[in-house]
Length: 217
Image 1: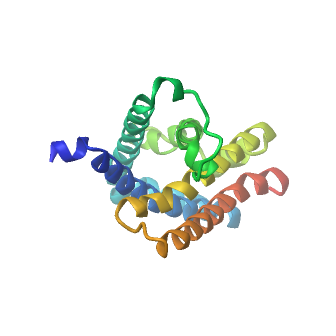
Image 2 (image 1 turned 30 degrees about the horizontal axis):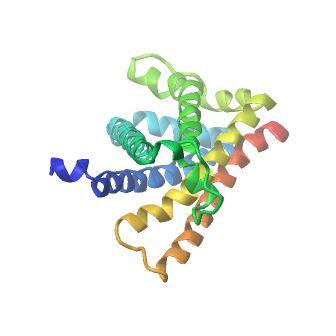
Image 3 (image 1 turned 120 degrees about the horizontal axis):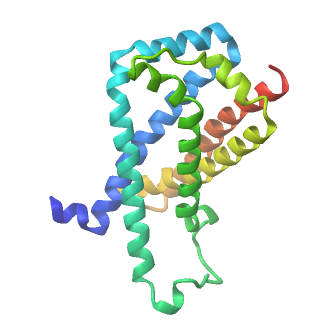
């Protein structure tokens, strides 16, 4: 088992499985956050449920582990790919490649996504759910969102984050299926379309939240 996980296929399989898990979380997180656009009371109720639910509390370390494993294995694979290239090719950019722009820049996109996650945790999780874990009273969730997204600079930074998520997900979604065996010419175009559709819907919906708070709330 250990030899398999250390193999190229094993590492990519782990990345794919954790990636699927994170894609599900992304969709669920979006549904909960959209409540803020409906009403402040509904969003507060959703956040109170999240804070009080034992299932949600139990899932927090699982989610954190999923992120950590996905990130570490991504770094591992990228490092091995980089060291496997000939010395003269480490910094060279090929003139012709079939890989998409997002495929060639998955590592950089991943770094932007990680920075955005850390920023998001500082802005929201640290003031809400973390305080509950510590036995303190958290900040008002709706006020946190409204105050943060009244600042155009934060809105722009979050939009950049959502754009990075779009490109990262639109490539990672279908390549994860390719890793588990759906790699024929019939399924790849369908999965690529589905990946772009999923990434576009999710990221545009996420982007609507800061934009609406900046312009209309």
